[in-house]
Length: 86
Image (cartoon, rainbow, N blue to C red; front, side, top):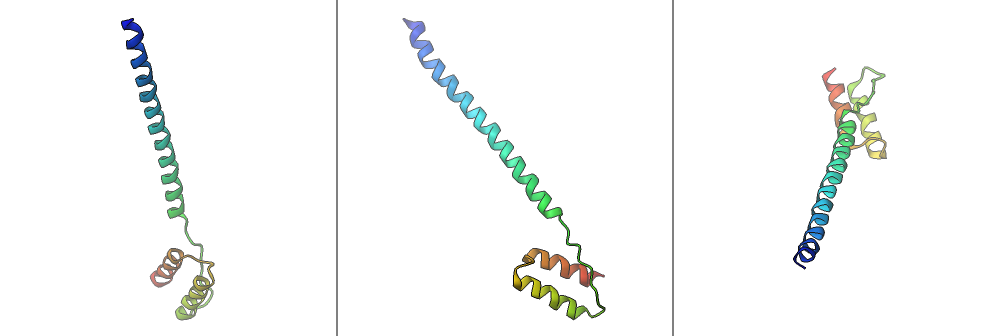
């Protein structure tokens, strides 16, 4: 009788511990994949080459792309920094 009570308590507890461990592992995989996607997004570079010599016209063109939604604010800032550094 004591063995039945013991196993009736131990089996659900062990199942719960295995469930928690499995959930922790799955959350780790999801986080790792999210971090990988975030790093890939950060590493994307804008291949923008200015066509003219006028810096202000190039920045104006970039601003128009930003306003129209073609570029994000981050992409705009990277391209502008690249223009100003060159």
